Length: 236
Image (cartoon, rainbow, N blue to C red; front, top):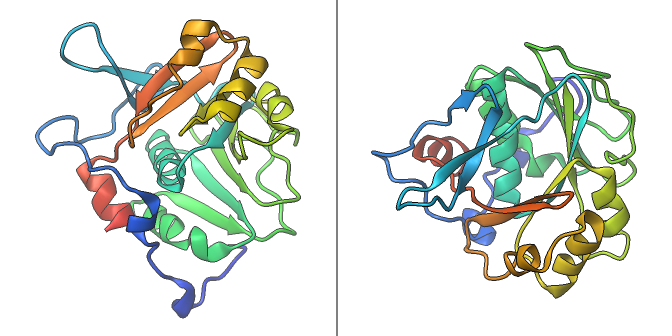
């Protein structure tokens, strides 16, 4: 691993209870993260019948993709880990390497590749169709919503959706995953993405494993629980 080298005493497991982790999916159903022509399976949305509808997002394209993240930390870990199933190389830009060491090791143990980069290092300039690049922006002076990116590359930008400058940051990103949503967060989403009154109402009352996926004039509630395998590899 280039970049940060974690000493043994720093390689600790995060306190899962502090993250308010939801229960994993039931073992007999949907226990495998699957991919398809549309990209990465993000989670499920309420369906028209009794079964929820899978929701996939095409995060890697022949142009850059920026994703605004204001979610519990376990959701950020899940998204980064699931992108490895698409062959992505993970680059984590972090001021505190101890927060991300467990995820990077889990990626390596699962056959993927990941770097934990220091503040003075730079991520790859682009990805390739069968080797895309995912950058996790968790560092103060690196602005993932404005930094130049290449094709087949995506960046997850961790930001505060309630901040006064969040509207500008949201508009700079292709999509946003946000949860929970208070009145200030909901108003910022409405202003940034021109949401309708019905879409604004959908931001309220999110369950512990729910977030909203928002983009211009579109919003969906998405359940993002870990699968049993993800729960065991990342959080147990």
